[in-house]
Image (cartoon, rainbow, N blue to C red; front, top):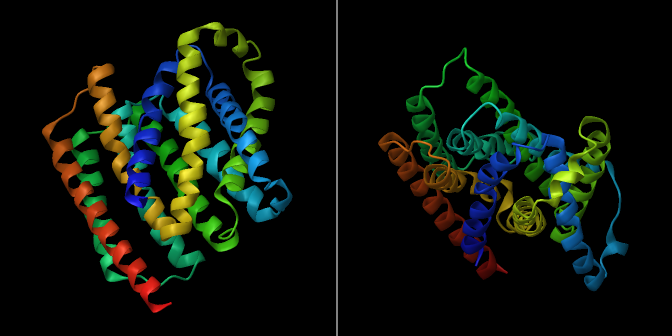
Length: 295
């Protein structure tokens, strides 16, 4: 079941680069984040009411930090970075997140570095680096600036998974998803009033309504519930492995809809990425079965 969640979330978040690229024609980055979070909150609100979990929400510095690092910061930075780079390269750079997740787990969670996990991560990392180097990003181009901005966003994603594991491990995924979205919505909504106050007028276009539905309801609302479920199941590093699959979705959409190039070097890199994910999932499943049999 969890491998299905991993694949589903990879598809939802991997397509984010494609949809965001479309919205950037008329929307400012903070406006895009506001509307996708707004729709995510709307779809999660009745679920939380039905489950009667509002009384379980306990505001704390860790919950606020998780919420801030989970959407407001990385989504805004990711959207800004797409103004300087192609969606294909964006998906590839975003796949560096598990590396950051493993390092932060060692520092913050004091986890022991298991050799097999490092092997899995390094295989995927090699695939990402191979694609990145062969892409040939110039150090003087705007694309390199976009890459640096996106790297900060990936670090933010990694920190979210690690902190939620340390401080909010037993908190409902629905609560974590709701708080992540509503804090980002409030922050970006405030900024939007000054940066792009007329953004609401573009929502009259039904094409944009559909795009925001996908980004808000599916990628944001449903997406973060799945993400925190995966964190609770296999830990932050396992959940962050979705970013190894996301380049596949980004490459596919960029090639078929945005006329972006997909080279054989990218495909070779993806083979390494898929191999690393398959090995990590096998390891986590074996570890889970061992834990359940010992209970």
